[in-house]
Amino acid sequence: MKKNHPHDLNFVVEASIDQLEEKLAKGEITSRELVMHYMNRIAEFDQGELGINSIAELNPDAIHIAENLDLERNEKGVRGPLHGIPIVLKDNIDTGDKMHTTAGSLALKDHVAKQDAFLAKKLREAGAIILGKANLTEWANFMTVGMPNGYSSRGGQVLNPYGPGEFDTGGSSAGSAVAVASNFVTVSVGTETSGSILSPASQNSLVGIKPTVGAVSRSGVIPISHTQDTAGPIAKTVRDAVYVFQAMVGEDHQDPVTGKARQYAKCDLTRHLKQNGLKGKRIGIAREHYFDSISEEKRNLLDQAIKVLEQQGAIVVDNVTIPSTTHNWGIGVMIYEFKNSLNAYLKTVSKENIKVGSIDDIIDFHHENEEETLKYGQKWFLEAAKTTGLLTESDFLDELLSDQYLSKEQGIDYTLNEEQLDAIVFPNNIGAGIPAKAGYPSITVPAGYTDQGEPVGITFTGTAFAEPSLIEIAFGYEQASFRRRAPKLQ
Image (cartoon, rainbow, N blue to C red):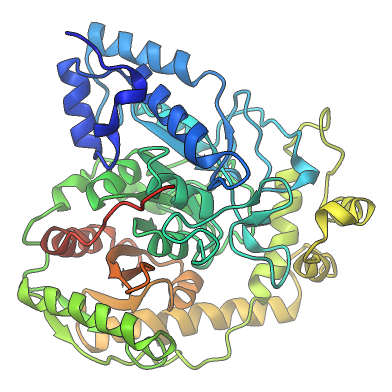
C-alpha cells in the first residue's frame, strides 16, 4: 500500500491511540512516519522565536526505535495499545539513553541518567517510543516565588497554544501538557506534588490523571516531597490517559510506597471505561471557597458540566463542605522533605558531567551564575537548606501529622463518608492542595472554553486508590460532553 509522505499525515492531528493503532495495523502509516510527522510539527510550530517551546530535547534514537517497533509489529504482533506510540516525558524523569534529565536547571544541563526511571522502563516495555523530554517550570516550580508557570533557565518560556503569551500554561508540567495539546506528540507524562498535572492539563484542554501516591513508582524522578510526589499521564482523551497509566503502574522494589499498588498489578483499568460510568454515582460539588475564586463565566461552564453529570444518571450533592478547607495550609512538609529527597537523588548522579552533589552545591551554582539562574531568586532552596535534612525537626513532624489528619480524616475522606460520595468536583486545579497533602487521586477533563478561548476543566477527586471509580466518572462525562477542540496554531 502506498504510504503518505510524513509531512502530509494531517489525519494524525487529534488522532487517539486507538485511531493510530488502527492505521498502524492496516499499514496506512508506520511508527517511523508517525515520529517524523511529529518532528515536522515540532520544527514548524514549537521551535523558533515565536514558538510554543514545549519540547526541551528530542531523542536522537527515536526514528531507529520506531523502525524496530515497526519490524516487531510485522514479525511478532503488538505488545499492547502503546506499541509504536510516541510519548514525551517531563524533564525531571530519568531516561538511561542519550537525553538529559535537568528539571529545567542549568546546574543539571549536562546530566545524563545512568538508567531509566522505573516508569520510563515500564513505558518502553509497553512499546511506547520516548520521543523526547518536555520543558517544565524549573525544579517543578519549587525553586522560588513568582516564577511564571512554564519558565526555566534551561528551557525558557513555554506558551499556551490556545492563547500564546495571553493564557497561563499551568505548571509545572507545562511542556508535557502543551506538547499534547499542540499535537507534537500523542500522549505525555507529567509529575505532580500539588497541582502540577491538573493545572496544565486543565489549562490546555486535556485529560490529566494525578494518581494516588504509590500507584506509580517515584524511582528516577527528581523529587520534591516523598509524601506528595507522583507521576501521571496527560492526554487528549480519558481512554488514552488510562492506557498510559495502566502501563506505568506496578510495584517497584526500589520504591517501597508502590507496595500499596499491588492491587493494580493484574487489574485491567480499561474495564472501567464505561459509557454509563456516571449512572448511580454520588458526586459532591465543592462550591464554597473553590468556585468563588473563578470568574462567573467559568462557573457557568462548570454548571453546564454538572448538568451533564445529572443527565447521565449521577446523583449530584451540591455545595458539600470539606471541614479543613479554610485551614491555613503550609508548605513546610515540602520544604523539609526537599533537602532530604533531593540530596538522596543527587547521590545517584554521575559527577563526570555535573559538579553539584547537594542542595548547597546548587545554591552556590546559582550564585556563581546569577544572571542566568536567579531571574526570580531561589527562595525555596534557601529555606530548604536551613533544615537538617534528617526529618527529625518538631516543626516538620507536627506539620506532617497535621497535614495527614486534616487532608484525610478531616478532609477528603470526611466529606466522602459524610455524604456517601464517590467523588468530589473542583474547578480546574483549584482544590488540588488537599488531595495533594493526602496523596489522593484526581482526574481532570475538558469542560469548555471562555469567550476568549481559555480552556476550563472539571476535576474529580476521590480517596486513596479510587482511580477505577474516577475513571468511570471521567469517561462517562467525557463521552457525554466531548468539549475538547484543538488549538489553532499560527
